[in-house]
Structures are given as C-alpha cells and as structure tokens.
Length: 347
Length: 257
Image 1 (cartoon, rainbow over the protein chains, first blue to last red):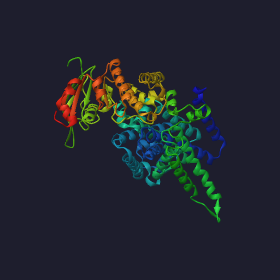
Image 2 (image 1 turned 90 degrees about the vertical axis):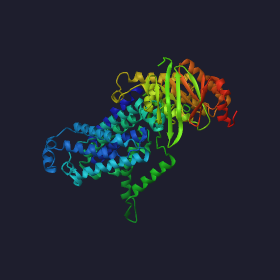
Image 3 (image 1 turned 120 degrees about the vertical axis):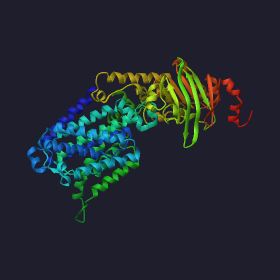
Image 4 (image 1 turned 180 degrees about the horizontal axis):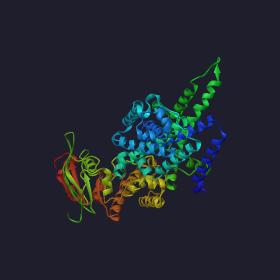
C-alpha cells in the first residue's frame, strides 16, 4: 500500500487537473495554475534556503531567464517579425515546442547559476543574500536594455497560452519528486550537514562547496521552469514581472511553510496564493460607510505572517514532512522519534 | 619511509598575525600508535589538530600522511585520505537524527551522482540500505543504538561526545584525532571513555592522537606523550618519563623543579 502511495498521488493530481481543466471557468483555472507554479518556486527555493542553508534572494532572476527564453523560442516566427524585428536571424526563425523551450530555459538558468554560483557561493549569510539580490538586479537590467531580444520595458506580449493545468501540475509533480529524491539521499544529507555546521561537515568528508553549488543550480533550474510556465499563463512578460516582490513572496512561502520541509513549502505556496485571492473578495464585499476596504487583504496576510513567526518560528511544518505527520496522527505516538529520521530511512 | 610510519610532520609552524601558535613541531607516528598531546591552555594543541585536518593552513612545514603530502589539502580531502577528528566543543549536526549524523560520516567514501539519485537507478536503494546498516552497526559498537532516531542535540552530554567519535569512525579513518574527549566528564565517565578509546585502538587497528587534560586518561592509555608549551614541543617520551620531566612540571606548575 505504502509503496503505491506516490503513484496514487500522481494519478489523483493529474486526474483532478484534467477534470478542472474541462470543468472550471478561466478565473479558477488561472488561480489553480498559479498555485502549481508557486509550489514549484517554493519547493525549489527550499533546496537552498531550507536544506543547504544558503539564503538566496535570486529566485526571480532564474524565473526571468526561463520566462524570456521560452517566450522568445516559442513565439511564432510571423509574430516575431512584427514584435521583435531586430532579433538575430537564427532566433527569429526558430519556433520550438513548449517542452523543448522549457528545457532549454532550465538548462540556461542552471548554467547561469553554476557560473554565478562559483564566485557568489564563497559568501554566506547576509552577504550571500545581498549578492543574489544583485543577480536579480543584473538580470532585470539586462532584460530592460537588451532591446532587440527582450523588447526592453515594453516587454513581450501575445505569448501562446500553453500553460494548461495539466502542464502546470505535471511540472509541479516532477519538481516535487526530483527534489524529494535529492533531499532523501546522500546528497540531501550532505546539504543538511552543511547547513548545520559547515566546518564539521568538511571535516567529515562532505565536499562543502560542491554541495552548496548543487543546491543552488537545482533550485535555479526549477525556478526557470516556473518562470516559463508563468509566462505562458499570463501570456505577457515585462522586466518588472520578475521583481523583488516575487522573490519576497516565495521566501515567505518557504519560511511560513517551514524551511527544510517539502510539504511545508507546498502548504506555504497554497496558503500564500489562495488567501490573498479569497481576501480580495472580502475587501469589496465588506465595506464601512459605503467605502470598500482596499488593502485589507495585504494587512491580514502580513499579520498572519507575523503570527506564524511569533508563535511558530520554525514554520507550520517545521522540518517534518506530511506523510510522517499523518502517520503520527494515525498510529500511536512513538516516543521522541523524529519524523525526519524515519522518512529518510524509508525513502 | 619505514612501513610502520603513518604520519610524518616536519617543522610545522602556524602563526596568527605574529602570534606563534605552533612552531618547530615534528612527529613521526606509527600505524598503530596511540599518543597523547598535553600542555597548558593555549599551548597550541587544538591549533595542531586544525593544521593537521586542513582547517587552517600551516605557515610553514610539511605533513605527509600515508605517503601523501596533505600539507595544503582541503579538510574534506584530508578526511577522505583517512584522518578523522572530534572537536573540543562538540560539533554535531544538531538538528539531524543520530542515525543521519553517522550516515553523513559513512558517505564520505560513497559518490552518489545526481542522476543516480533522481532516477533512483538500480543499486541506489541497496546502497542506502547498506549505509543505514553500517550506521546501526557503528552505533551498536558505541552503545548508542537505542538513540538512532533521536535528534542529536537531545542526547546527554556524555553521549554527544560518544556520537562524535562514532561519526569520526564512520569516515573509516586510519588516524583518529581526539580533542579533549573527556572534558566535562566525571571520573566514572572518563574511566569508561578511556576503556572505549583503548578498545577502539585495539579492535580497529587505528592510530590515535589524543589531546587531554585528564592525566589519568592520558597516562593510562598512551604509549607516548608529547608536551606542548607556548606552541613549542618541550618534552616527548613514555608516560612515566613525562611525569618526572622537570620542564613539564615547570610548564604545568610554574616552578623550577
């Protein structure tokens, strides 16, 4: 039974996504797709910020790389002739299938993360956070000024709306599965060792730098996938789409869900996508003296984040995973057996 | 090189901004030797371990381990070459389980590649099972088996010290460096630890360098003792010789004997 649980989950998720795709209206479909994309972003950021312990703020940069790459590679040649007339010839002729464009974008983001990571990952803590923030600024500036390819501040619109619910949830499953497997392997243990005590890890044979680089590159790869999915969901991208605001939101999802827990990131992403959406409706229906309460949703979310940080600083899930929590609730509570160890032992 | 020699240290020196933490240090260590390094606080004992394990590079000198020059090697490479250590102030992977702590040590010699892990290629599950099995055996040997699932920092102090030794052994060292393993222990615990170290030394055929302030422990198990003071080697010999040495008495008690 337990062996088939993941398989059942995959079938259920894809089945529901397919069902929703044919039954729900555009608005709900879009919210559901954004949830999937945010899950990809949060789970992949967790690899650095939760597991290897490197606080990266550069996720939006890799998203932008994926979004622009996929946009330029999939845009029909005829549209490109009008929208991007100055595109280099070889780029103006290509018209690739979505999946190929996503994979090329992911490869590109991974390459950038690798090249940038070699100098930047010599830093730690706040310094690393600021340096990765710098990476985001650089990518934005490039997108803003590389007119022939990115169309600058005007951005690229009219992208083919490839991102269906099946695409979004399919990639979400791939992301969660790959990162789950990395985390529950010697590579993941090495990441956690580096997070806990870098010097001690090195003295016990963990190749510290390589381990941190691996987490950074894998995180960037999936951020790029999320960026591509997002571009073809909204069908328009500008450099400002990939601002600090996105990074901030994803970091909040990871922290609220519990850095170091994949299910935590999933839960964080779902909450942080659904709540603003629900509260926005309250804003317009609730009114004091005929005046709608605009901004209420942001205030409520901010207060909830404060509450989580005050009362559960380790995040909703801490470092535990959902299957272990469920098993703990179902079976008799075994004394002082941390869920993590068991999960690692069985995975 | 004589076949019995595992570690040769020549003229080792380390200075921190002009402060000579270690100078003219030398050592020739046999493959199955257990030696003690003693000296007052600040004598350079921990600096010696830090230099030997690549944590801080030496300012001068040469370290040859098992026929290999490791003077400027990185800590993880030195660990894989076969030198493991414990720390004076215990350094565990605190929020991970006891089992995971040991597995991290064990995987120093396994090289899982990303695609093998992601695709769960054949052999992955078997390797993981083997790793867990070996980890349990090690915990068994150190009487920690009951705590396998517990979070490392939830263990009582004495067991945390033993867990640190377990992690060090997990990397399959030829040379084990123990930095004040009996610190903070009561006489009974220190006695038990001493027997444990002697047992590991015999059963695993290890070479061990032991830094320790507890003289009963050092004198009880070490075959040879080096005395450091102000970063310099001031005496070297068998335990009974060291106990009589006037320079040692002076360094410790501050009087000319």
